Amino acid sequence: MIEGTAVGVALRDSLWLYPAVQTFHLLGIALLFGSIAVVDLRLLGVSRTLPLRGLERHVLPWTGVGMGLAALSGALLFTAQATEYLAKPIFVIKLALIAAAGCNAVAFHLLCEDMGSRPRQDPRHHRRARMAGALSLILWIGVITCGRLLAYL
Image 1 (cartoon, rainbow, N blue to C red):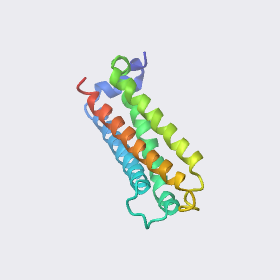
Image 2 (tube, helix red, strand yellow):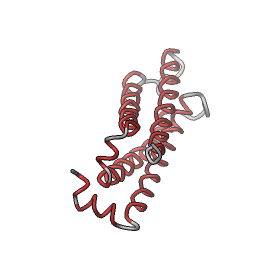
Image 3 (cartoon, one colour):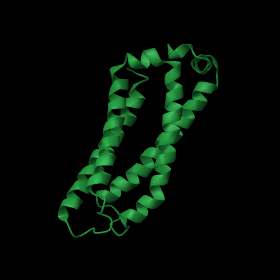
Image 4 (spheres, rainbow, N blue to C red):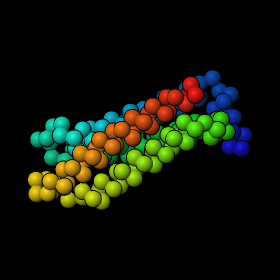
C-alpha cells in the first residue's frame, strides 16, 4: 500500500522527519482554525462593529494557507500509517467532519452571500449566519478532537 512508498518509508524511518511534518500540520491547523474561529465568532455577534466583508478579506487568505498546509502535511503523515489510520473509526469520523465543515462553509457563502452588504435588512440572514458560525466551530473542534484521539484510540 501507500506506506511502502519512499515517502512513507522515510517518514517512518527518519528520527526527525515525521515530527517535522507533524509540526507543520499543527501550524496549518492553527492557521486554519484560528482564522475560521475569528469569522465564526463575528457571525455569532462578537465584535459587531467590524464589517463582516472586511474581516473576511483580511482573514480568509490565512484560512487558505492553513488549509493547504494542513492538507499537504496531513497527506504526508497519512502515507506513513495509511492502513492503521483507515482501520480507525475516529479517522473516518475526522474526514467526515472535515467534509461537513466544508459543506457548511459553501452553504453559508451561497445562502448568505449578500449579508455583508445588507446586514440589517433581513433577520433570516442573521439566524443563518449564527447557525453557520456555531456549526462551523462545533465541526472544527470535532476535527481537532478526532485528530488528537488518533494517537490514543
